[in-house]
Length: 115
Image (cartoon, rainbow, N blue to C red; front, side, top):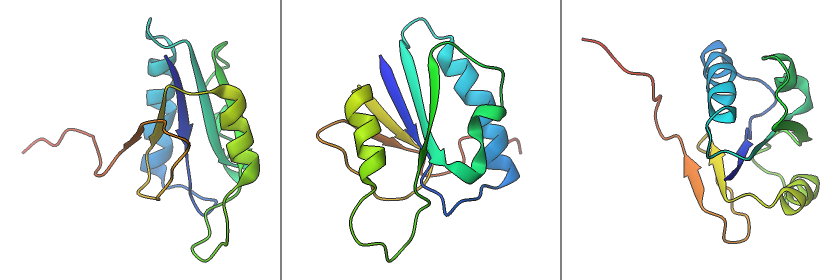
């Protein structure tokens, strides 16, 4: 399976978001069913520096999210065309579509809560 992770943020991330991605990407990458991961995020985030290099994880840049932006990020769509993901994972609530690839969104913090 090829997974694209798209981080459509305004150019920043909370500490919790960074911790989440820096833990989840390496765990996904070593799963036997995961062939490759494409991680797209604004250049300012330097996601590739958050964990040691993994042979099946590629980081690419995308434009920061802008509420009033007209049109879509053509460079991101080109990266997705070349990668040809089986599924796209979006940890943010931003609306995104790409061809007919299924999109998985994180709608609430997935960290377990202990009462």
